[in-house]
Structures are given as C-alpha cells and as structure tokens.
Image 1 (cartoon, helix red, strand yellow):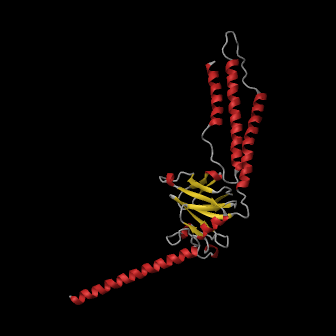
Image 2 (cartoon, rainbow, N blue to C red):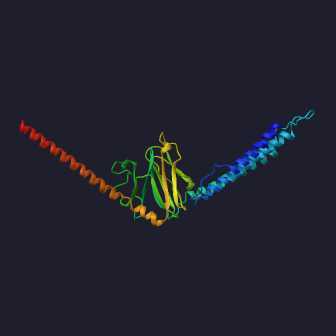
Image 3 (cartoon, rainbow, N blue to C red):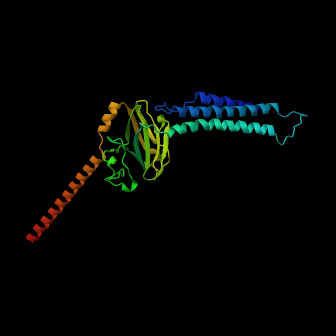
Length: 294
C-alpha cells in the first residue's frame, strides 16, 4: 500500500515540478521556434509514458497485492500483448524522431540571401571574418595562419582582399537577415552556442562545419562554448549584438579589411626594420668613435 502511495506522490511531484519549475529555456530570439516545439513534444510523449507506466504500477500494486488463498496465474508469454507493445513503442519512437528530422532538414537548408560569417575557435576565444563588398569570403587554410595572417586567408584569392576581420570577441548581426555560420577550429573541438538562437554546432579541426539562423530580436546575447575544450573552457565566452541595419553598417565600417590589415603590418614591419638599421648604425658609429679615442 505504501509503495503505491509513494508512486502516486512521484507522479504528482513530477507534474508539479514541470509546471512550476524555475528552470526553463531563455526567450527565443531567432527563427528556430520549431526547436522549442520539438522539445515540448518530447516532454509530452516522454512525460505521458512516464505517467502511464507509474499509474499502471500503482494499479498493479493495489490490484494484485497479497491476499490469503489467492493464486497467481503463470503466463510465460503473451503474443498479443507483445505485438501491441511493439507497435505502440514504434509509434512513440517515430513520433519523437519525425519532428526532429523535419527540423534538421530545414536546419541544413541555408537561404540564398544568408550572409556567410566565419567563426574561428581557438583555446580559448573566438574570432570572426565577414565578407566585404563582393559578399564572398576568400578561401583560407590553417597552413597560412601567422602573425601577419591570423585567419590564414589565401593571398592569391581576390575575394579575400576585402574580407572584414573582427579580432575581438564581440560580433554584431543585422536583425531579420539570415546568417550562415561557418565554423573553424585551429586546435581542438569547440562549439559556438547562443542559447537564445536555439542553434549550435561543433567546430571540428580540419573541417568547416555550418548552420544557419535568422536573428529577429535586438539585444546583446552571450556566446558559450558548448563543447569541453580544456582548462580554459569556462572562460571561453563572447557576445553577439543584434541591431538594426543602420547601426550594423556603422559597426561594420569601424573594422579593417584584410588588405588594410596587410598594409598596416607591412608598415609596422618596415618601421621595425628601419629602427633596427638605425640602431645598428648608431652602434657602428659608437664603435668607430671608441676605436679612434683609443
């Protein structure tokens, strides 16, 4: 009897916790409301099965509890029951999988008007590369990465010259414009995740993975790495700011293109060389003066 009461308390407590729980997902700020719908459907199906199984156990406890002179019937198998349970389970699994497959089909179909944004992950931070006026990202390779070329852009690709480099952890996006995230990693597995966008994907070394979303609510959102990537994993955070087109263009104009970046590096290197030459000349002059004085 007490066992049945405990099971009833578990059912009531589980339902109450689900209804009144303070832990729920954040407000959605993208087009992926279907993600929430799929999870809610999973709650309904999984929760419904859980409640039915618990109620069945409570029924069995009260119905078949021990009574003197009661005899149990031995029934090693029941083909009808097994067939019914198999079909019911198959339908339940199909109901769980089908919506997810439909959402996944949309998840990998990028709209033609989406802007490509490269997200480079490294231990432990993020960098971004956006297309310039030609709306095309230049090709890149990990082999090309250096102090003068942090994104590994191919110097022979004309599409990469006007690429916009964002070496800070803050990325801005235009509201109501689809975004295709191209993920790269230069060391280990990472995962670019913004909870409000309901979209994420692993960044795999040696592979460019992708997904897309359309931000539809202005605001600043936190970026998390959703894949354990080492001792600094906890600190691998950034921010995404969604804003109107006018403000987004202002932010974009503040950043350098790859051509400008190369020109600045060339100028800095030239100044360094000039300083080294000047320093060497001064040393030579001082040595000559010391020889003459001796």
